[in-house]
Length: 360
Image (cartoon, rainbow, N blue to C red; front, top):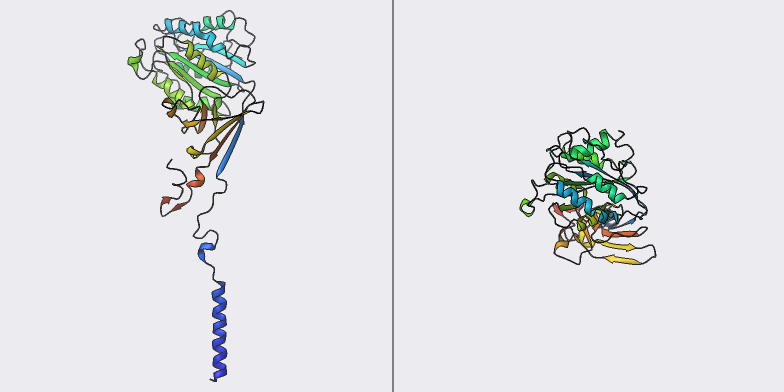
């Protein structure tokens, strides 16, 4: 082979080699190869408008066994504190009473009437007096307190009966208030079944809440209580409701708190996504356009930290205002980092988002 031919071959190889080399792309620069993807939208902003004129059905479930005479009197005497949030408010309310007695024919999930009314509403004259008579259901009822069964019967099984028709409205929020010094022994519907049924009545879980004025778990703190109202307390906790000690000497504060909680002006706001807790910011703009920023903390921390104004409840993925609800027509804005965007990408089995989550 001549020198010229050999040179031509070598030149071709070199040129070819240079061309191949120049086409190489570093793997790390190729999208999707060796790179952690950037979060698509790491910040979420939830905006919710406070309701103006809510429709609310409130059902008091009152124990009428032999030990409940004084407790019924306490409820009736302090009911004006509850009604402070309803009278003249423009709220479209129905408030009724059933007992825990599922044996006596005149009880068994039937609304208790007084002065010709089966429940009180905006048109009822002297509503606090009428309710006081309704709530004084007597202390000669059956000894088995079946509050859960009574509610299910009143709404699901006897909602169209003459004694109950018109009280329950599908479009209205539903608030339950259990008042009993003993635990629930219902057997018509189990606790899990009841919760599923109860929350399924409305389009949103915030429209169904249960509250409990019962004997606390620490029975020794309630000398007049018979057994801890564990099932009622569990239901209240599951629905974000309030709980109170039935042995309290002064019922005015608890009825005041219940009036606010059940009036329909929202204290709890559900988030659309899971947040990085440390990044939650809550701002409220009132109808006049004035904004207020609130101090947030985790549920439970407010007991020791008196500066807390709003708490985040991880079990319900919601924020709850502690002392005062946003006024009607206010806009509540909750801003937070999305937790899933920081935890979806893993490297060697480790969560790549641990640092971004701040150890949450």
